[in-house]
Amino acid sequence: MPIMRFTRFTHRLTRFTAVAGFTGLAAVALVAGVAAQQGPDRAKPPALGPAPSLTLPPIVKRTLTNGLPVWIVEMHKVPLVDVTLLVKSGASADPAGKIGVANVTADMLDEGAGTRSALDIADAIAFLGGSLGTGNDWDSSIVRLHLPVANLDEGLSVMSDVALRPTFAPAEFDRVKKTRLTGILQGRDNASTLAALAFAKVLYGDAHRYGAPIGGTEASVTAMTAADVKAFHAKVYQPANAQLIVVGDVTAASILPKLEQQFGTWKNTGPVPKVTLPPPPPAAPRMIYLVDKPGAAQSQIRIGQVGVARSTPDYFTLDVVNTILGGSFTSRLNQNLREVHGYAYGASSSFSMRRSAGPFTAAAGVQTDKTTESLREFFTELSNIQELPAADLERGKNYEALGFPQGFETLSGMASQLTMLGVYDLPATYFNDYVPMIQAVTLTTAEAAARKYIVPDKFAIVVVGDLSKIEKRIRDANFAPVKILSVDDLIK
Image (cartoon, rainbow, N blue to C red; front, top):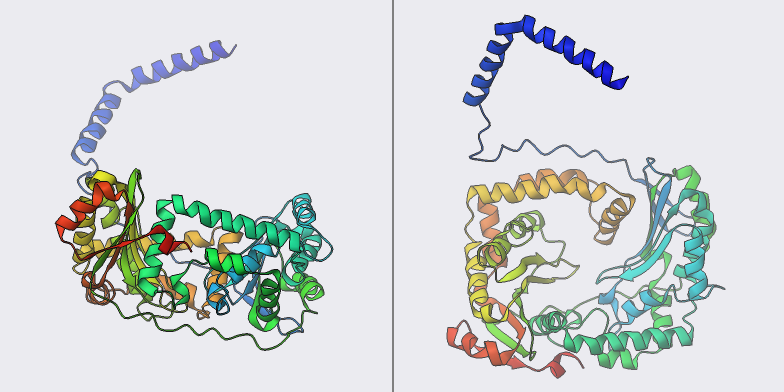
């Protein structure tokens, strides 16, 4: 039967074509001729339209009875909720002589809390179909819960224990400490890790917190005790230094009683220690620092200088400049070292903006036998960024403006954006202002920012690789004076 129906349809189509005759053929020929004359212009990409407007749900701001601020954003498309406890202290708040204690504290929160062991916590969250994570960076520490909204009561009970009542059990602390020391030891064999350690040390020195790794050094972790971690938690994890961020299928009316039940009795225990970092050392003339990694298949390169704090008025301009230089796949550094020369799998640059001035870094892992050539191409691009064709500027601005909404697609993405807003006390209008501020960047302001913050004559250059193969050629190229650093200098 299906074949018969198809046959009759074909017969009717044939009759229709026959009746149409010459008229139909002429129409087809006319259309084909016009299409040939007006085909798409493939000589250049189509012009981009304006960046679409971003309309976000409002941030509902409330406060618990103990003064803990709460931000709530309703997103009702899926029955999920993301709850973040933001503590506005991170590794920069490490007490003197106790480098890494903030990071270890965050790591220890879910290793036993309240009446639950580490396994009990993991089992409870898995049973609820959710996830719970802890962590920190230089300026903040977080506990983040993500789960179905139907299981929110049970999930918040676990989360509040983890954040407010960690046990810091000696056995768990010893295990975490040994794991941390093992990781530091393994870093001796990782060229990328060594490059990061060396770069921070030569930029900031031993007296500045940014000169040591966020997780601590071998000496500081070895000396760390469970009492140090407990003391840090007691001083820093307080309602006066924290904020709750809730995103998902909830309303203020439905979520606030639950938050009050779990976090409303949390009390302040005293003044929160104020973080005051010393100014970084003044920039020195350009210098190359070599670290020997015998047998390394690649050379790890880090180039840069002390950059700017997150509060810089040049934030949006530097965002665009860095996108052009090394902040995207089509950036100058990546196109040069990867696409044109094939020296590296990828090359990038970034401004690590913290409460205090973080580093500007250009980085790549390159072929050992192309280390000197790669350095030369780095210097070329880092110098040329001070002059920008209008087309490059527009491309960088469009990349940032058109990609900005992607950060708000998921609950976790929205929560991360709000967390950044809270950490750096950004204005409530920041999200709406972002695209207009990016589009307002001009050639004049972009080139001025590049000249001010990317200064090749002041660069510190770190290269970790097999010095038996790369040192002589680097010295012969005479890029800058050369100094040798030992691995023991970096990991101790």
